[in-house]
Length: 266
Image (tube, rainbow, N blue to C red; front, side):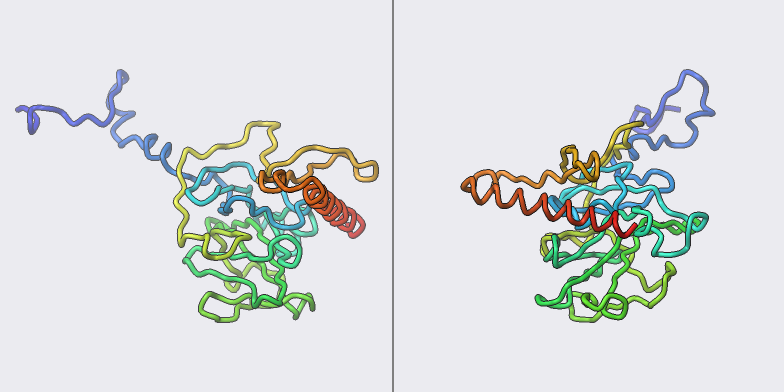
C-alpha cells in the first residue's frame, strides 16, 4: 500500500534501527527556542539597563537574544544554601539591583503574568533586589522590594493602574514577592508583555566571563583589578570633550565609591 499522496512525509532517519527515533526528535525545536539551562532562572533586560551596584551581582551563565533585549540566565540559589532573601546581598550573589535615585530613574518591572510595576511617583526613590531562586521545581527571579518600613528613604512600587505594591515583611521567599520576567531602566513603554526571545541559548564556556554589560578591566591601587562598566555611547562621544570627560569622571567616581562602601560594609 502506497503512502497517501505517494510520498513518505519523513521526520527522522537512522541507519541504526528504529528504536532511537521512535520519539519525534526535538533538536529543531530546541535550536529555535530560548531555553533555560537546568537549575537556572532567567530575566530579560532591554539595552543599556545595567542596574546599580554592579559589585553586588554575580555574572549570568547563559543568554539568548530577544526582540527587545537579552534574556540572561543565572545559576539558581536553593534552600540547601539559604531560605533568606538577605543572603544574596550579603554574599554578592544578586542578579541585579536597582537604586532608582542613582542609576535607574525610570525603571519598570513586569512579572510572569504581565503585570508591570514602576516607582511610586517622580519624587520617590525605589530599591529592588533581583534573586534567582529555586525551591524544588518552582524556579523564579524574585524581585525583593524594600520600602520605608525597612529603609526609610525608599518608597513602595505601584502598578500601571495605580495599585500600591508592598511585599510582606520578613526574609523568606514567599508568595508576596514579584516573580520578575522583564526589567528596564527606560520606562514601561519599552516593555512588551512577553518579550519574544529566540534560540539557541548560548552557554558560557569554562573560564569565560559573561557580563551583562560592556566593561573593561582596570587596576585600582586600593581595590585591585576591577571590571569597570563601559558606559560610553556614541552620543556621549559626539559631545564636546568637556561634557564627555565630565560624564566619564562621574561614572568612575560613582562606581569606585559604591565599591569602597560595599567592601567597608562587608
